Image (cartoon, rainbow, N blue to C red; front, side, top):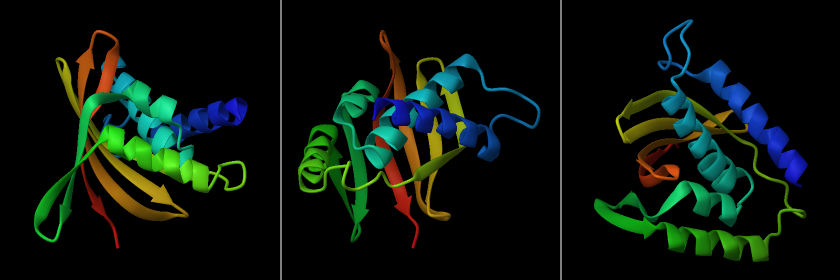
Length: 157
């Protein structure tokens, strides 16, 4: 399983280069900090949550105080990362991945902005050729690197 995960992550990076819209400008390259943000988001969020449901990868890239804000019927609800991981672990018990192949979710990063120790990434998630989510992730850089601290999103119809 580890080999296929590595292969998929490497492919995810190649998809990023091909799909990115506004960052970097045509012919330019990502800064080291922008690439580090993309790497964390890809490993912890795209692969960790969506593709492989891997709690260890999630914990590595998400800060323990992370919260997702969910707009539901005009109210904002919060989902802490610990509860999100609990849901994923329950799903892994109910539907183990060897019996259910990963949902092939790819990501485009139209915007990756870094200012000092703060960053924001706009992430467009696609499954089966259909745009399913546009996410706005907030990150801070800690002594051990970039960690995702917050998320808001739009679920496409």
